[in-house]
Image (cartoon, rainbow, N blue to C red; front, top):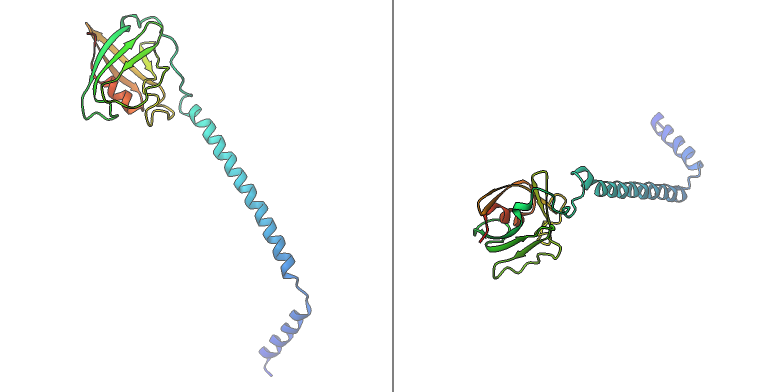
Length: 184
């Protein structure tokens, strides 16, 4: 018998003499794996919750309905006809009638055939020369952080008002405010 065969034979006898309980050890390893896996999932869920909760804060705060109209907005109060040309993003083409009231309420009369919801608490505010509005809050995509309230600068020339976007992620509102507003 060669040395190699003798070593193999001796090691096999020695290995067979050691009792090994594989099943109980395997069950323990699986149990520990499940505990670690549950902890990782719980940690990931916690981290996702924190990210979701802090995202509006990180993006500049949670948008709210604008505060009541302040001074400087008095010359905006009135009723305007707004002709939104076809082809503008947001699907709001047509003649709109927009009323800005002294108390900060905003009334909107859509063109015939417009079937989307406009909401019932439409408001606007002018703060530091910036016009803010929540019109089209019900439109798809306008509920996202940064899209709840649009911000615009404005300039009046006679009976017309032109708005220039400062910040607004709501496509229908951008289309409405991109058009020239005229008092009849």
